[in-house]
Image (cartoon, rainbow, N blue to C red; front, side, top):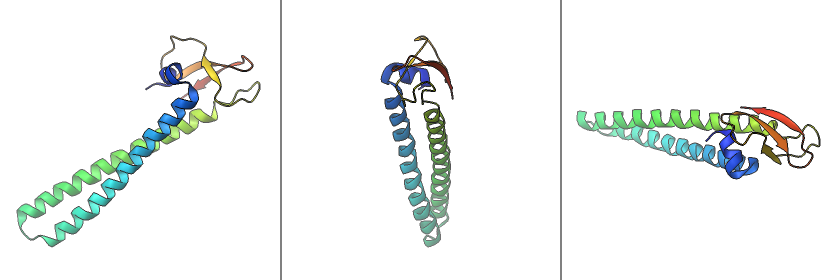
Length: 126
């Protein structure tokens, strides 16, 4: 979901909270992948038949790939949300996250916003 769409639907604070929750769900997936990777590696050394070792090798590759994807996605979502959160302070009055879109038809991650308290306008770029 783009920043403009998130602010339009939920408001900035709810969008930010949702981005952090989605990011942390990727962190949980990373932990499960690390656990699966350790179990698959242990199983690969216990079984001696070629078929079992190939199955364990595939499990290692799947867990490693999914874990790397989850780590990358977690870091992306977290850094993006934090970067945008640092821009959500109103330069006029200092209110945090109390903003609305200037152009309701805006799209993308670079949007013009207005403070709900003092009506100061500035641009947030993701």
